[in-house]
Structure formats: structure tokens, C-alpha cells
Amino acid sequence: MARLETHVGPLRLRNPILSASGTFGHGLEMQHFAPPQTLGGLVSKTVTLKPRPGNPHPRIAETEAGLLNSIGLENRGIEAYLRDVLPSMANADCAVVTNIGGEKPEDFAAIAALLDSRPEVDALEVNLSCPNVQGGKLPFSTDAKLAESVIRGVRAVTTKPLFAKLSPNVTDIGEIARGCEAGGADAITAVNTLLGMSVDWRTGKPGLNTVVGGYSGSGVKPVALRCAFQCARAVKIPVIGCGGIARASDVLEFLVVGCSAVEVGTSCFSDPANLARLAAEIDALLDERGIADLASLIGSVRLPGPPVATCAPGAAPATSAGGGR
Amino acid sequence: MPAPPPDARSFRSEVVSVVPCGADAVLLTIRPEQRLPAIRASRFFMLRREDGLSPAIPRPFSIYRQHGDTIEFLIKVMGRGTSALAQCTPGMKLRTLGPLGNGWPTLSGGGAPWVMLAGGVGSAPFYMAIEQALAGMDSAPPAQRSDLVYLFGAAHKGFLYDVDAFERLGVRVHTATIDGSHGFQGNVLQLLGQLQRDGQLPERVRLLACGPERMLEAVAHFADERHLDCWLSLETLMGCGVGICNGCPIPTNPEGPRGSWGNVKCCVEGPVFKSTEILLGALH
Ligand SMILES: Cc1cc2nc3c(=O)[nH]c(=O)nc-3n(C[C@H](O)[C@H](O)[C@H](O)COP(=O)(O)OP(=O)(O)OC[C@H]3O[C@@H](n4cnc5c(N)ncnc54)[C@H](O)[C@@H]3O)c2cc1C
Ligand SMILES: Cc1cc2nc3c(=O)[nH]c(=O)nc-3n(C[C@H](O)[C@H](O)[C@H](O)COP(=O)(O)O)c2cc1C
Ligand code: FES
Image (tube, rainbow over the protein chains, first blue to last red):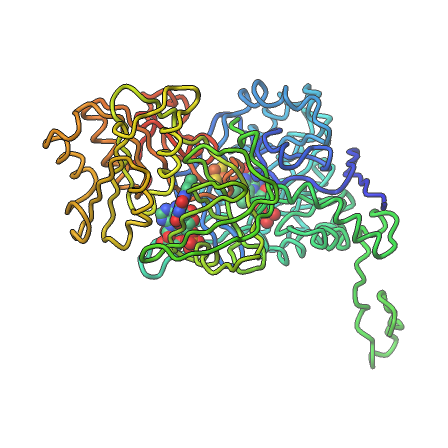
């Protein structure tokens, strides 16, 4: 039995497995498939200030190695969430994370202020990165200053742990992560969906009604892993990896590149009970390798050493970070 | 928030047999790890091969028949998911989620006859509907054979899957094909109109329908004009089947009982809806 406990800033999790926002309901709807006591935490679907009806059908389109979606943050708004969902979470035996979204920077702070006094909520995840609103412009997750100011606004109204959820659709995700850290985030969630599209060449019809949408699932894992790695290098706060995780080994890969926990999304659609099995599978993998504490894997990636200096006179002697040459 | 049904589980099943049916379908029989209780007709399961040959997203199928510890599906081969299932061999394991969805309303005996309109593979939820109506559902009086009228339509007779099995149930079965290769030439609604004009069916009937969207739209319109009770079993695109992806919205009728929100989730609030609750045209 390895120790699976992990910490995301001030938040202690029994294991590193969280559900990803928008892929496992709002509350305890899925408890028959994945009992909360098997999870580190449950992340709600994005909650917005006002109810949002979401985008027209078709909102999902499967592709060779992943899924496109254009749900459009359908939700009944913060009032309904506080009234109908949160009370049932009071005794949830895992961390409860509310994911919040908005069209304007003030929206985020307004929702956070309403959630701050709610004891059911253990942390807030700020969705800076939904590609299915504002025409996919992603204003808050492509501009480090704007990201920082949104997080700062939320930080000002709550003492709850704050995760900033970033978009992979940027050139330098590390810069955005640093902005969020400066704004007062306790952790970075990397990442939301990639922008993508599909089309049927025979009919000329795009798979999604919105034409372009968010791409997720196993096909995005290398991109998500790279983003999580770059965030972990860029900031001192913990990183939560997300994107294409389906198996225990995927989880461990994200930990090795520097994540303290992970969120699992699209693979829940293949089998919603998979989420509940991951912790036990991780435990078995660690036992197999004689690893007693999951924490020892975090950030243990062995990078190749700097290039060997060959001729430059006065160059410092090359050292190898990975060793073994 | 709508949740998956409390009896739904994720489990493995073993493929017992795959038998060709009609022009392009198979009858797939599986044995779940654990024996399932009796399942209401028009509930469904999500099925997926886990050997890498199925797409990542499982596909929804109505339960067709249940015998002892096995359940059977009627699967029309459409694309990647259905062809992977049609190529299963006995002994293979399938990821199975279910039972999901609500199923037909109580098909009680007495009152107006129940007319069941099936379009092609839309026949799947009707076999057990007939069995269950005859046996009596939810402590309601059982239906008589003469109260149950099954109208099975398709483009061509090759898509009238397993029609003999329906005939053996002993209820009134009529077929309609667009090309006239079997039964009435035309669609099931035209057939219904014909039977009513001939006096073989009264004006006042209770309708159940399952089939392509355009057929369901026409049925809903027919029912609306005549103020008939009508339930539709929808076969929309689904991403999860358990209410977590938000990928199966059906627009609601703003004047109907579900009008307080713009759409319902087909998987957990359906797949059976009263025709007055929803708006179908918006789906295409
Ligand atoms: C509740 C429910 C019950 C169902 N019961 C049955 C059943 O008993 N038997 C059965 O054969 N099918 C049933 N279906 C439909 C079945 O799920 C789809 O045909 C299947 O998902 C297609 O998967 P595929 O990978 O083979 O096709 P894909 O590769 O996904 O698509 C191939 C083609 O089929 C079309 N298509 C895909 N899904 C649908 C759909 N839902 N409706 C219409 N066209 C579609 C696509 O647009 C595309 O042109 C049911 C659907 C639902 C929601
Ligand atoms: C259908 C669907 C809905 C989603 N809804 C949200 C959402 O409301 N808020 C959010 O922050 N992310 C949302 N996401 C993104 C996921 O939380 C996750 O970041 C992304 O899908 C990558 O992880 P995955 O490959 O494991 O799915 C959604 C993803 C999918 C597939
Ligand atoms: S199919 Fe996922 S919510 Fe209905």
C-alpha cells in the first residue's frame, strides 16, 4: 500500500484523482459509478452568474483519437447551484471544487464572493479558458495581465484555495501561469480543451453546430503533458494536470513532469466507473516498483543534460542532470 | 440535477452470439457479469468493445429482448461503433453501462388501443413493450392482444428486421415499405391513416413511436393536430448516456411541462418523451 495522499496548496487530497469540470456532473450525480471516497475530489461543471442555455445541437463530435465539444457552458446559474446542488455536497467524502466562469472579469469575483461563505466548497477553480464562449476568443487565458487581474479580483473576495484553469491555445503557457501566480492563485490547472474542428467531406457539414469547439481525450495527452510540464517549470505553486488521462500510467506521467494532482475528463465517457478504479491501479503500479510514497514521483522527470560544450574556450564544464552517460 | 438511474451500473458482459438480421443489422446477445432484473422496454445500454477496435465513446442501444441471464440488442450497422459490435465473436467482453433512461410509460389495458409506430431499427424498443403490455405493467390492467397494434415501416423489406418475431407475439402487425416490397406501400403514418379510414382502427388511439427524427416529427405533428396522447423514443447522438457530457440536448416546448429550461437531456430525462414536451424540428 503506497501513500497516495497529495497536497494542492492548502488543500489535502486522499489521492491525486479529481474529476474534470464538465465531465462528471455538478455534484453527486455519479456516486453509484464512482463513490466520492475513491476520489481526491469532484470538480463541478462551470457555474456562471446567470443561467446559460448552452449551444445548439450537435454539441459533440467524436474524431479518430478524441472528442470535440461545444456545450457552451450550459448551466442553471449560481443561484440554482447554491440552492439545488451545494447542500447535497455537505457530506461528500472528498474535496469539493466549484469551477466558476464568466464573460467579464467582474463576473468571476461576483460568483466567488457568493461561494466564499459556503462550507461545502473546499476550493474554487477559475475557468479562464472555455473555448465555447465569446466566439472562442479566450480573452482571459491568452493574456497574462488579464489572467492575473481576473485571479486578483477573485482572490480579493475569497480565502478559499484558488485554481486557475488555463488554455493550451497559447504560445507560452508558462507566462500565463506566472500571471495567475502573481494574482494570488494557489494552483494552476493545465489544461482546458484545444481548439479543433471536424467536417464530413461528403456533405461538407462540420461535426459541431458551432463549427469550432474544444478538443479533448487521448489525442490531446502529449499537448496537455507538455503544458503541465511548462507550467510546473514556470511557477512555484502546484500544478494539476488535465488532458487525455484514462489510465493509472497516464496519471503517473503527469506527476513525474511536476503535477501534484490530475483531473480526468473525456475518459469518464468511455466508462464513468474508471475514475473510481484509478487510485487502486496507481497503488498497484507503485507497489510493483517498490515506491512507498506517491509524492516522491512528483517532478522526478529526468531531463537530458545540457549540450556538451565542445570547443568554446572558457565554457563551463558540461554536467549531466540525468546522469548515466 | 438529473442523475443517471439508481440501478445503472458499469460492468463487463460476455458476447454469446452475433446473428445477422435483415439487410444490414445483427442480433447481439450478451451475458452481463451479474444477472440483471427485468428491464423496462425502451430503456437502453451503452456498449463498447475494450480491445481498441471500438471508438472511445460507447454507443447507445435499446434493449431488444431479455431471456434469463442474457440480454439481446438489434443493431443496425451505421459506422465505426456499430460495425465493431457487429464483428464481435462469442466469448469477447464488452463494457456495458446500464440500464439507462426511463422506458415507455405504463401501457395499460382498457382505453384507446396502443398503436406502435416503428421505423426501421426503431423497432428495437417495441418487442418487449408488447410482451410487457400483455403481461401488465406497474400493476395496471394488462393489455389485450387486440389493443396492441404494431405498425412497422421501412424503406425496403430488408429493413423490416425480425418482423416474423413480432408476428409471433400475436398482436396486430401491419407493415409498410416505401418501395412497396412488403405490406402497404408508403410510410407508417399513411398506413395508420388508411387503417383509420377503413374502420380497422378508431380515431382515438394512443401512440408510441421510435424511428428516424423526421418520422418522429411527423408523428408528433399528427398527434398534435388530433390531440392524441403520444410518446416518442428518441435516438439522438449521445456522448455518455449518463447525464455528464451535456451532449444530448432536446429542445423543450416552452409551453409544455418541461418548458422551464430550454432543453432536456435525452439520456437521463428520456429517451422517451411525451410529444408535447419537446420540439423536434430543431434537431436537424
Ligand atoms: C437511446 C438510444 C437507443 C438506440 N437504440 C438503437 C438500437 O436499438 N439499435 C440500433 O441499431 N441503433 C440504436 N440507436 C442508434 C445508435 O446508437 C447509432 O446508430 C450508433 O450510435 C451509431 O454509431 P456508429 O459508430 O456506428 O456510427 P457513427 O460512425 O457515429 O456514425 C455513422 C453515421 O450514422 C449517423 N448516426 C450516428 N448516430 C446516429 C443516431 N443516433 N441517429 C441517427 N444517425 C446516427 C451519423 O451521422 C453518421 O452518418 C439508439 C440510439 C439511442 C440514443
Ligand atoms: C463535454 C465537455 C464539457 C466540458 N465542460 C467544461 C466546463 O464546463 N468547464 C471547464 O473548465 N472545462 C470543461 N471541459 C474541459 C475538461 O474539464 C478538460 O479540461 C478537457 O476536456 C481536457 O481533459 P480530458 O482530455 O481528460 O477531457 C469540458 C470538456 C468536455 C469534453
Ligand atoms: S449523453 Fe451525455 S448528457 Fe446525455
